[in-house]
Image (cartoon, rainbow, N blue to C red; front, side, top):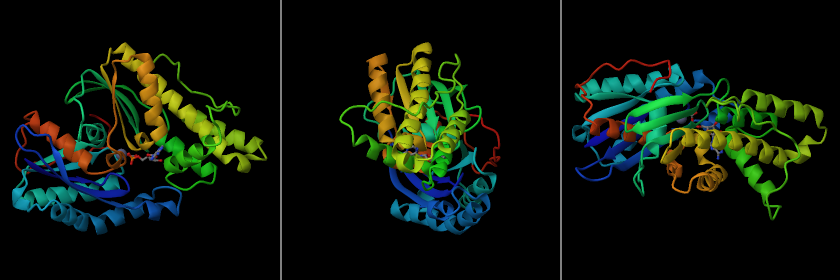
Length: 347
Ligand code: KG4
Ligand code: ZN
């Protein structure tokens, strides 16, 4: 089975080819990403209109490169997969319309995939050991902070969501307040690591960031209060510019405590055998280490899974993976079916 996947939900134009032979694990043959980060960084965030125009320019060359890198001719494809939502509607449309046109022209089945399903299935690529179900799945990206229970492949139930900002958004907006570049997550990460390198053991926190909703009794998140608390602390601190690294470290600790605390509570309640952490924020090496350490303390039998680094932020290999697992579950896919662009979030 060979799948061409296309992803254009935000500011990355991406295409990937996945191949899977009977009784073999799926293999990513190509994973091409044209990132617009350098363009949007000038404005401190994604400008939807510019993103849309860039997708139009890049989508065909990116797909052509993905097919060429995978040494795959269109006639060898069994299906085309595309992100149908959630995301920026003006960005999604480029991928959707291109996928529809190619599926029609090449007479291939077309699958519309949920972007978050893609982030989750990124963790299933190149797995070293099988995921035991039920699993608690945390997806943390620039647009989402979602907790779900995965009973089996394709059986996802959302148990928690953010009530305001996403975790990645808290990083991006916090970084902006601290004068750090977009995207904020990697910049805050680097500054926090630099701060930590001065200490031989875990430094004491002195800035007093709150952990909103950590003990709310449900699995929802809220990060806007934490972001406002950073703003007020900076306004009250004349010397904040000399303490940027400390601010980054303690702000990051607050976000990580909430993410890990809630996920472990969910794992306990749903008697999970595994935890899967995916999305752009899962690229953080400190978040990964803390997840591994704290899960081990909570339940030494819990398996903890992350996507490989190249599949954490937006890419099309994750959409190809989600499509592969969907097709392996024998979902009926008609040749060229019209997939609707989704605006709401449903898995
Ligand atoms: O999954 P993604 O590429 O896009 C969305 O679907 O939103 O995630 C992007 C988010 C950004 O908010 C970025 O700041 C964050 O992931 N991010 C990180 C790191 N690398 C990317 N956050 C924390 N630490 C990182 N190392
Ligand atoms: Zn994403």
